Length: 190
Figure 1 (cartoon, rainbow, N blue to C red):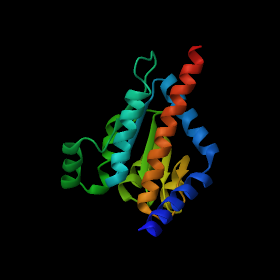
Figure 2: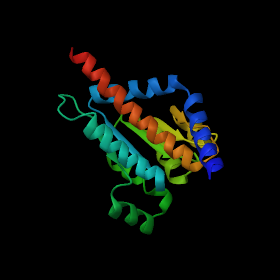
Figure 3: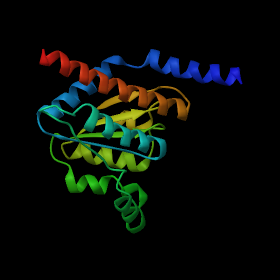
């Protein structure tokens, strides 16, 4: 059992030690800019990545916004089950995110796709739409990043060949983003 535990932790440590911190700064700056300009942040993913997207909404929409004059407008596109299942049934599962963006996306909104493989067709399709329609795109990926890393304007890549470690990495980075936002806001209040 210890061999499995050590290998898992080694993968996670490697991902954290080797990721591009400059990209993290750029994504945090992008979120601050979205908040300042009253832009909406749309997030989405499938499975565990979908749960991370939901978690992102809670941490940024509540924990990084509560009792502040300026708040983040953040929406998770995979949280509306009836919308997802309607598009999946009537159109295709590849369209469940892009069709929602077609309803809401405005120029300068931030669109964040989570995909540990970097190749989820519904995430790719939504990011491509956002790129073509004034959205500012971010990809949270694992593995080598796949197509999502190639097409997103900004990329946070775990760069580890393990799905669960990639998802853990994304959640850690999400918590770090929330902490950076809160500490910067506290500093700015002084």
